[in-house]
Length: 114
Length: 119
Image (cartoon, rainbow over all chains, first blue to last red):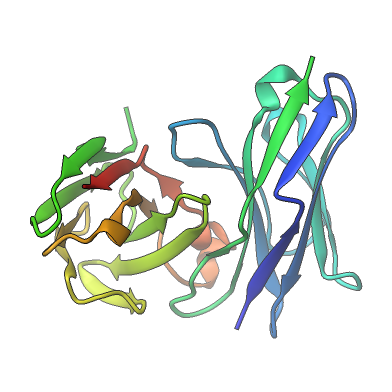
């Protein structure tokens, strides 16, 4: 079984400040990890993903995440928040092989304060 | 535009009615999904089809019946609607399964969602 825990359902940052959204996963086999973003009244879109190889992955809109196996974490960061970053962010996990489900965390709502 | 499109975007109906949501993708993907997002934004997979074959069927009331006439379409029919069915239903697709995809198989492309309100 696999699962994802997102710490903090709401995160507020000031415009220009560092964004840090936390995600820890549980998986009995090597995971694939994802971050998705959902803007109001829209579907989710992929920000970035980790499968194998380099543990620091870069995504769209200046976001990046680092896979840390020892900490079972995949935290999402952005050096400087923009107003347009205000959205709901979902961490997700799946595994390789067969008909594997993608399991989502509960989401973290990011508020950017001007 | 290449996309996952679902209709209708909004659906308001009375308890006990039957309704359908349609989904189409023109990405050439082999696998399609239905997800339910509740009022707290929690996303839960309901069904998945790979090339018209049902491969994931979560614990969902049998009032919910998916149908995939071809690999580009996945529809969701709901019978005897209940208040608890109110949610946003998302259709999604992905490339498929197998080691050649290096994780892209598990990357989901979502539709814009269908907000169902049961009164």
